[in-house]
Length: 149
Ligand code: ZN
Image: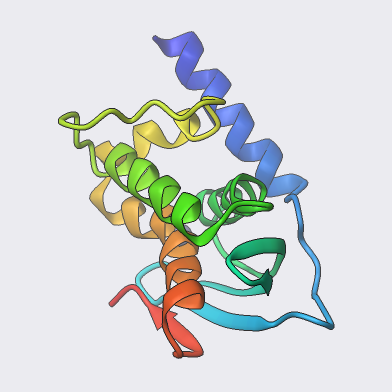
């Protein structure tokens, strides 16, 4: 288990160091800010939505390693997906980080697994889920900013 934990930590550190899709998007159709005041995580997510499909997604901002890695993983997971598919991924991720063992939390690529340890640290759950809440708001609401508080 400790080997696995170390691997998970490495995945998070790698995403933190080399976040995927970390750039501004000039022709974004949606741009939403997410803020977690508890930790100071602050990101802006850019989306290019075509009909029902997330054609492109990117983000900029700063925060702790967990929040940045989570935003990076979220962005690569939902690119090319429909709103509905993105919502389903939100649910999978949410269950994983809140330790809900009731549902089936297997994601097809095991991409989210490195965040499973977050469930043990309630204050970190907000860091991990921030990107997903911001995405959800970008997909379903008119708001331009989201806060975890
Ligand atoms: Zn954080």
